[in-house]
Amino acid sequence: MFERDDVDRAEPAHFGIHPEAFAEERPDPRPEQAKRMGLSRHTEEGAVLYFASSLDRGKPAHRMMAWILLITFAAPVIYILLSL
Image (cartoon, rainbow, N blue to C red; front, side):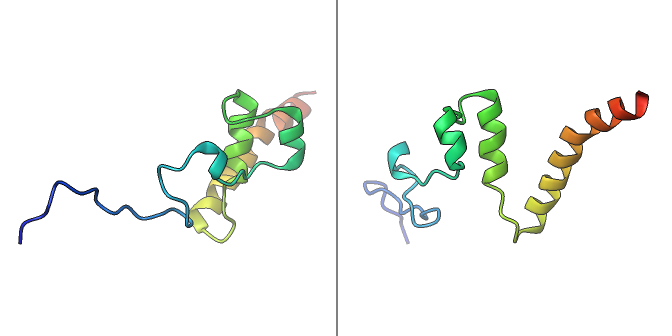
């Protein structure tokens, strides 16, 4: 059969939110303290915090990424402590 191109194709909603929803309509996964400090995903520190808070502990790939982040940020501190 032929597919009509004069209508918009239905896209799946991510967690019940339409993909074209405004930023104000999307849930904010940031902790309350980050919101008070003004950290958003548009700042360097806020982007890391936004990424880390969006990880889901039930997914194995997200758990692996959380361990990689932990090692990445802890390795310099451990190296400095060992070199002293």
